[in-house]
Length: 456
Image (tube, rainbow, N blue to C red; front, side, top):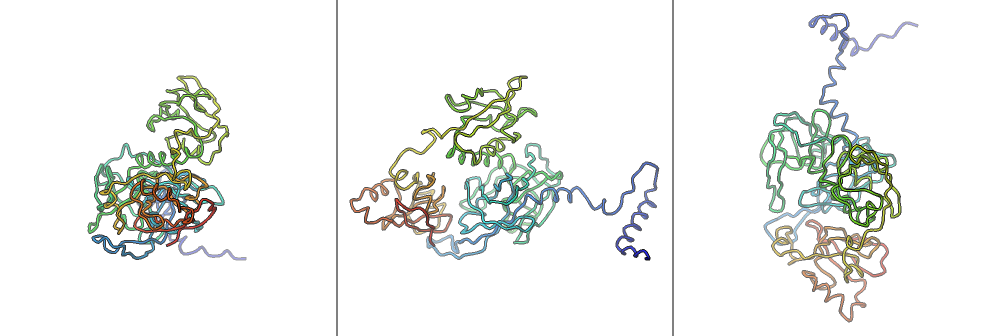
């Protein structure tokens, strides 16, 4: 059987290689570099390295049509954004504004698989949020670099869901460092990276990569009306905030008593311990201030985020192996997690015991700046007790309680008045109203509620 002719494209590439040899010359010992290898530029490799860790986020939310009025005029739009995998179990980092007020957070992976995510924790001030999906297989976390040594002029790559076009790649340089940016009356950023890599709506929450494919920032904002001016949160700050968010989540489930030394890595050994709570599980395990923890279980510690990732989804009584350096001595310690101490839990209050919420007042001026609404004020939900009526109704930390039954809830005294009424039992299940972003949600709280959903 005659040999099949080679495809034309293969011939062209061969001819191109021959042309390169003719131009550059050829000497013994030098490998022949073909076109396909020349196309694998550092930018291509950086994108390929990060691609499995970048996700697209979509969801429906309400936006205010007239921010200058106090009317709740709004329209529902399909929001879009980007996120990155920070833990193989499905923990994703994105911007708070990407998921704020979203009815259902839809996540699409690079391979096309789709999931519905739930909000784990958020920090509106830094505009960061952690969401969680439940993948069938472990995910590939993004490779995290550092923002401590960035240089103006350094090449960078942005990856994201720009205008809904999934996994859009743009390139540029770092234009400047330590920028302060006011993007709206309610959102102010400090210490941002400025880049001329195109960052468009939908890129928010996606990675800004260096030439090695390491994430050095979280894309967050664009300058309206300008070209080539985008901004990203430095990755060191983003990772420190994420570590704090996960630490707060862990403290609701278990307790270890370790305080790390400000995300400072001691050479290649691990993370330094700043202090150990007396009578804590860490103290009982023999951990001391000044020790350097190099691993928790199978998780190697490169930054504080790794330590708190290792504590995720652990149960009280579970034992964890710690690899520790004390001076030049290597130690293997065993840490047994305990229930959170009473001091770490919200104080027993009528709202915590009966409704499952810890409520905190919001200053009137802050409330007016954050919300364009007809409500005069509200109470911030600082914590939600697991398996409580509030949790069953879908109330989240960060929501704002603005009303119960027919009364507003501007102060804790307002709530106490409602709960202490002699006819309160006749109101149960009591209707409540919360603000989540610029959206008003309502539901019905009952002391015996096991499951329900917020209504719109």
